[in-house]
Structure formats: C-alpha cells, structure tokens
Length: 339
Image (cartoon, rainbow, N blue to C red; front, side, top):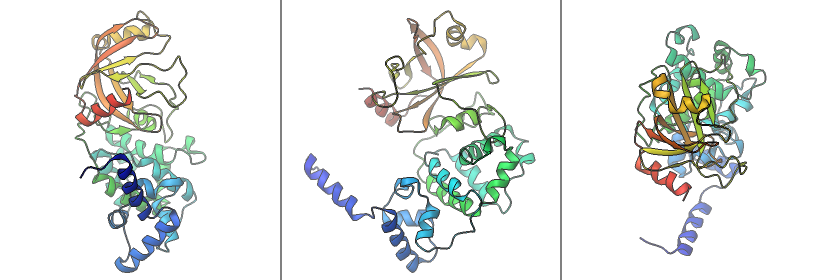
C-alpha cells in the first residue's frame, strides 16, 4: 500500500494517538495487563502494548518507575535507587551478544561475580567495568570506587538488577547486525558494528582504574598501552556544538573506505601525523567509531582501519581502509547523513 505524504502523516498520527502517551497512561495499561496476566516482564509489556523501549524510558523514567506507578511489587530500593534507575535508560544502545549474555548471566546469579575471579580474565574484567562505569557514573563518590566496591553497590539494589535482566532480554531480541569480535586485540571486548559510548570504549581499552573512567571530550584518544589511536567522529555536523574549525569532513567513501580529517593542528610530519601514516610499521592500531549526529550517545564501532593516503595538513585528510566492510544499512545511513 502506498500513501501520499499527507495521508501517511495522518495514519501515523492516528497510530501514535492510539498508544498511551504519558507515564500515567502507560502505568494504567500495565495495571490492566497485570490484572489478567499476573506479574509482567518488560518484554511482555512491550509486546502487548506496541510501545518501544524509548517510550518506557522517556523523560528519565524507567521500567521500575512504571511498575511502581502501576502498583506492581518491586524489590526494596537501595541508597542510590533513583540514580541507578535513570542509568538503566543509558543502556538502550547495547547490541552485541557478548555484553548482553555476560551481563545478564552475572545479574541472574544469586551472588554477583567475585571480582577476584573475574580478574583472572582480562576480557571479563573489562566487560564488568564497562557495565559498572556506565551504571555508577553519576553516583556520588563513584570516582573512588574499586570494581569490588561497584559490585557490592549494585548488589545492594536488587530492583535495578531485576530491571537490567528484563532490559537485556529485550535487547537480545533486537540485535540487528552480525558483530564479530576484535580479533587483533583479544583482551579488548569490542565487537565490530556494535555500538558503544565513550565510557564503554575507554573501559574496554583498559584506560584508568576502578569504576570511573577518565573523561574523553575530543574526537581522538591515543592509548599507548594497546597501542592504538581511537578516532570517534560525528558524520552530520549541522547540529551540535561544532565550530567552523571543528566541522571536519568525515564520511564513508564506500563500504570499505572512510574519509576522515585530523584535528586542525595536526601536521603530516608531526609525531601524531607520523603515527597515523606509519601505524602498521610501528605495530600500532587505528580503531574507528562513528555516529550519525550528536543526539546519539553511542558510536558504531567500524573496526580496525589501515592508512591508505592523505592530502594536506592542519587538518590532514586521511583515507582509511576498513578491515571489515560496512553493512549495507550502515553505509546508506552514513551516506545520507552527509548528503
């Protein structure tokens, strides 16, 4: 069926108006569903109402908040219940099976993982830190917490754990890409074409200690311990706080080639410029992360890239060749973002 623009807008508007529009209406829907079905999981609620995760988590609300308003029984709240419930809404981007299955497996255990055991695997310890760093980022005093402290704090919030189990179940059903592991750096738990926030990227790369990772505001971060350059860029720079000097021309040339511009101060013969050009000979890696616009907190991990050529300097316009071809839908979205 094909409709003209006006008819399409009217149909979509009618559908939107038929769905519960605010938390009070959604709580009433949940209350009525629970009256017939008993206790309801997040997945059951979404399937029954046609709502999306963004609807449940809109306005800094959470699934636990909705259950509370609907009169469903929740576990006893912890000291930082409100902060952690809001943090759950910052995990809606998670879309690789390893994070979801590992995190959900830990949370379902009666006893959360012993950090000493997790530390036996560098990859697992970083996966744990990726979860805790995001959940506890805005908890007062989180900067001084060890991973063990973070696990204890999360353990003291049983309703948040229950919500995360429900949320990860929904997210597991929504994985839309095949996401291969980053084989060249096995200790780094990143999957190509999955999405990650800056916090997760740094935690995965082993930057810092304890629960909180260092801040990362610029588009480039060199991690000497790997060693690797992390390049995070936004494709559509028409919105957001981009000054004329930071509106770099970053785009996908093809499914294998990425055009990227360095920071405006970078010369080709500088240490940074040479590191980009000579990264293969130096045994260093280049990892690319891209998002469509500044409304998105998470970046698609494009995988490792190899230097091909560059033009000019200050900034250097570099062509990178991806080790993994972009999926067709990502390439189309990236191309449309800069069209």
